Length: 632
Ligand code: COA
Ligand code: AMP
Image (cartoon, rainbow, N blue to C red; front, side, top):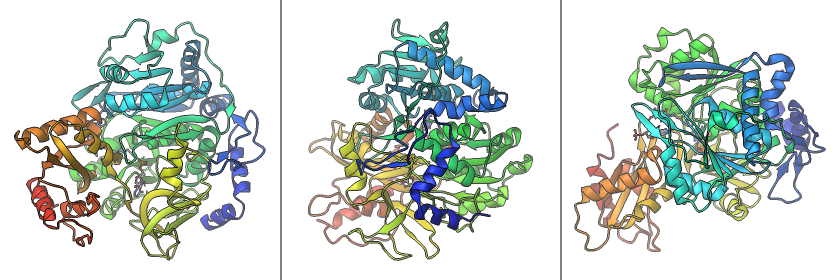
C-alpha cells in the first residue's frame, strides 16, 4: 500500500513528474508536453500547451464509455417536496442543447456568462453549457443583493446572464428577476441578453428582445459539441470577499482544475465512479463549484443537488433522510450545519430513524471545525469525521486527511496535513519559518499546484499585492495558525478583515463601506463576534455626524436594512450600536482586534499605541447593550 508520506515525498522530489502522471486521468484533445509553465512567474500556468474540454470530461466521456444510464444528478428539494434524477445521457443532451442555443446567440470561447440561480440542476447545466463552448461562467450566490450582482457584472462584463425566476428560502420566495433588473440598471456594462429559467413558484416577466425563456430559447437550435480549449484557459471566475467592497475575481483554469479535482476524489474522499457524493453547500460558493458540480461528475459519481437547510426543511432529520434514501457514501458540509442539527436534536433522535450504513465518511470545511461538533458527529454517525482546510483561491483542500489514500490518525482541531502540491510553512512577520508549535502566518511556497488561481480576473497587480507581496516567494493564505511536530496544521484565525458567518466568507470592510454611506454615519467599524451557531456574526459600531439628534434605534434599523439591501441577507448583519467614538491607535488605525476580544469577553492586552484607553470602556458598555459578551 502506498502511504501519504510516500506520495507527499514523491511529489516533493519530482513535482513535474507527479503532475504529468496525474494528468493522465483526464481526456485531452491535445496532451500537454509538460505540466508547469513558469516563463511568466509569478503567474504560473499548468498544462498550458495541452487542449481539453471540461464538459467532455465531466459528461460526454462517461456516456461514450457506456455509462449513459448512470444517474449524474439527483435533485432533492424538501422545499418544493420534489425529487428527480438526471442520467449522464440526459445531462449531455440538455447541456449540448443549452450550449448550442448560447452559441447561436453569439456566445463564444472566452466570453463571460453570469449565472444567478438557486439549487436546481439547471444551475449545473448552465455551468457545463458554458464549459462546453469554452465560455467563462461566473456564478453569483443567490443570497447576494442587486448591488453585489452589479459589481460582478461590471467586473466580468458578461455577454449573457442566465438566471432563475426565483429562489426558495424557507417561508420566503427570493425574487431573482427584480434583483437581476436592479443589477443591470446599476451596472455600467449591460449584457446582450438574459436567459430565464421560469420556476412554477414564480413566473417572471420577460423583457421583449432581451430576455429569453430557458426552454423557448433552445427550441430549434443545433446542439453544440465540446470545443477544445487551452489547458490554462479560464473555466470560471468566482468572486470572493477581500478587504474592500470590490470582490476578488478568482480565476479557475480548465485543465489543472480537472486534474487536481480528480486526484482529490480518489485520494482524499475515497470515492469512485458510481458512488453517490453529496456536498451540502450551494453552487454559489467554491464548495459548490468543486464538489457539487465538477468533481463528482468528473469522477463519474452521482451528485446531489439539495435545495433545503439542515434544519426546518422539515426537521433536523433531513440530512439523514437524504443520505439513506439516495445511498450517499460521502457527505461534505460546513460545521455550522452540524451545529444547527445538534442544537435542534442534541440526542440524535432523528439519526436513529434512518439506515445510514451507506455513509462512510463525513468531511467538514469552510470554517474551523470545533471539537465538540466533531465529537457529536462522530458519536452520532459512527464514521470518520474529517476536517479539511481550503479556500476559494485554491479550489480544493490545502490540508486534509487523505482517507482514500491512507487514513491518518485524527487530531481534533486540526485539518491534518498538507496535500501534495502544497509546501505549507508557518512564517513570522519577517517571513522566517517558525518552529513547530509556534503561531504565525500560514503561507504556501510558490508555485501553487494545478487548479489554484493563476491570477485575479483583470487584476494582475491586485493578485500580486493581495497574495504574493508580504512573503516573497510564497502565497499568503490570509490565515494564521501553526504546525505541530507531526506536521499537522492548526488553522486559528484570519489575518485580515475577512469573517466567516455560517461557513460564508464575508468582508467586514465591505460592510463598513455600506454603513459609511448612511447620511448620519460619520465613521464606523465592523468586527466579527463569536456565535455558537454561525461561528461568527458581524457587529457594527456607528459614530454619528456632529449635530445628528435622530433616535439611535431608528438609525441602527436603517443601517441594518442598508447592509441587507446592498450586500444581501447572507451578510446576517443584525447587530449594530451607536458609540460616541471608536478606539484607535495614535496613527488613526481602528483597534478592531481589541474590540472583538471585548465583545467575546476575552482578556486583551491594552494596546500600547491606543490614543485614549477610556474608549475601551465605552466599547464594553456598547456591546453590553447588545447582550455581549454572550453567556453561551
Ligand atoms: N438565496 C437567498 N437568500 C439566502 C440564501 C440564498 N441562496 N442563502 C441564505 N439566504 C438568506 C437566509 O434566508 C437568511 O435570511 P434571513 O435573514 O431573512 O433569515 C440569511 O440569508 C442568512 O442565511 P444563513 O446564514 O444561511 O442563515 P440561516 O439562518 O438561514 O441558516 C444554517 C443557518 C446554519 C442552517 C445555514 O447557514 C446552513 O445550512 N449553512 C450550511 C453551510 C454552508 O452551506 N456553507 C457553504 C460553504 S461549505
Ligand atoms: P472560502 O474562500 O469561502 O472557502 O473561505 C476560506 C477561509 O475559510 C479560509 O481562509 C479559512 O479562514 C476558513 N476555513 C476554511 N476551511 C477551514 C477549516 N477546515 N478550518 C479552519 N478554517 C477554515
